[in-house]
Amino acid sequence: MEARKPRHHSMPMTCKDKLERVFSGEIRQTIRRGERYQVGDTLTIFEWTGTPYRSKWGRRIEETVVEVFPVIVGNCGLGLPHSEESEEPMGWLRIFTMVPWDADPWYARALEELAMHDGLTPPTGVHLKEVLFAMYPECDFEKGEIFQVVRW
Image (cartoon, rainbow, N blue to C red):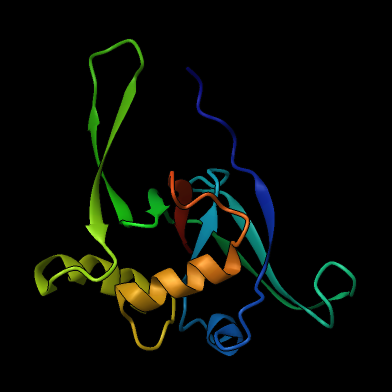
């Protein structure tokens, strides 16, 4: 199978508390619903001048995706990938380990790292859950939803 060519994406940033740190280069990660991004894709990261989708673009920066991986976001926790090549005809086999939002310190490090790279204060799994659930109220977190961690 031929690899797809890199694509360009327009990526609005609407979290007011992290806008300055994104444009200064301090924050170089976002967590987005779905599976549209791949390494090598280009991004135009921008802010709205007013109401999202009803106003013009403000500041913008151009970046290239350098890392991307899927996570499952659910009521019970965050599913982190353990990917292995599969000999099966289905190709790529994805195995996820669910880490509870309020995990003990051994497992919480992964959630804290994601929250820290995303610019959350405090950088905890519980705060990461609160932010994701507030930003995506339409999601079915009971069943779990696929998101991507995108880094540039």
